[in-house]
Image (cartoon, rainbow, N blue to C red; front, side):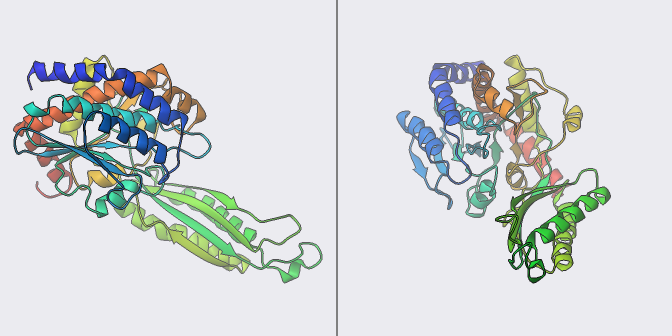
Length: 397
């Protein structure tokens, strides 16, 4: 790619800096939970429309999803840039999705400035409900990634990484049904739903001793009863079950279900075990594209931790994993906080709205846009990305 295109993209992002940072701060100050991201969606769409892009909202079955498209100067591949913008209960943007959203926004507007010099097509997809609900998977089932050749996004973190260490996760809600009674006068007339849930919780604690080092089970009690003098007739909990890959997850889920059933049998309760309709898959990183992103981010002054060292930081989960098993995808991490500040923590939320977060918006927008332009302009990079994907999926040797 010519240095002139690099310069035009970077200059355009710099021109938009105040607008992008303001959008990031506005979304940060108005955190919204999964599927309810009305303010964030409206904020991002308003900026796109201000810059003469046509935006369709409520796309691919989700009310707070949106899409805009930019066509190049001739036929070519389609690259999708993804925005997330949901927050966490109680701690707001402690995963920094305000930065993800406005990085994608900035990258798209940066590419708009050079669209007449690029083949193919750029699509910006607003993807709700990453923290809970699997918005990208739901959108994928509705056709959001049909015809997409590559998908790109970034995520804030405490370090710069070419990819996110990522494992699968399944979400399950469990509800125990007992029978209420006076806990002192007539306890023998009751069936204690809290006993059922606690027995299951202890069974899961015991199971944790006998699962793989790459597997995790964790949960909370969401409903524990109404009052100490009433035998609880209903309790509920929410649990996440994680494994390194889809096959391991499929084997672990029945073992967890058995713990829930054991709680019911041991307490005399009935139990409903409700697995979510979407499992998050592991991240199938496309390394030719990830390496290209890292190269551009390094030119902006960012120092990256080698990915083989990143595994010591632990692994999370993302519905971008589901996209990565459909098309070549990247999900690099950009530092916005010190390494000792972890995501999903109130301290990280502060950093996501800081000057370091603002810097990540601009750096991320530039690196994403430059990587996307490289991909659209380079048949060699397109072939490398496709070949790497095919090998990772066992489609070719």
